Image 1 (cartoon, rainbow, N blue to C red):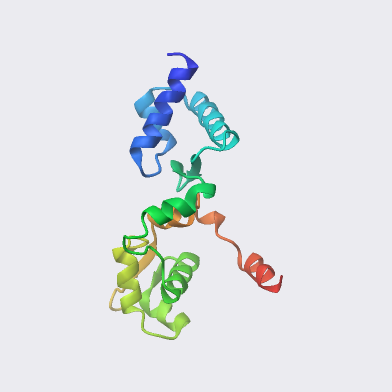
Image 2 (cartoon, one colour):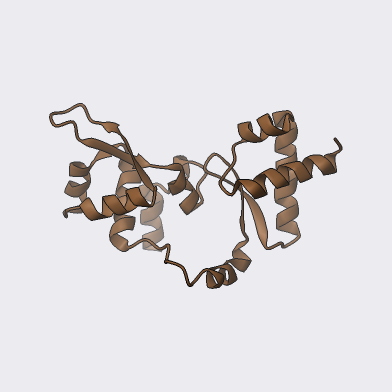
Length: 176
């Protein structure tokens, strides 16, 4: 298989997956060595960026995914505007931030930080698959532990949790 065919194969896998696809999954399907795959992905990412295409390839949620380029996002949003809005409310964003920075966390700890009951918001975030139940805390009553999901990383365009801004970075942005 020549380089052009290998690129086409990787591109096709990214296109049909819809969700981020890991390097291991691409390697298993394509049977290409990881070093060659990394080179192919780097070249594809660069080609899509340099050719100002309507889609791009990004590294997100420990994998690679085709997404709409930022330049075209307004028109894509307009196309899907008739559907249910995919925005998160301020209480949902606040709850999600607390969970992301303190995971695993139980609801009582979450509510202590927020100062209000969080039943509805937690249910909504679970329904949207942005958080998940990670187990139970070994204390009396064994409350559920919550943490973020792969969909959370995808929603915010993060490779992993280490890309979350630190509190120092957030405070600096507020001061600016």
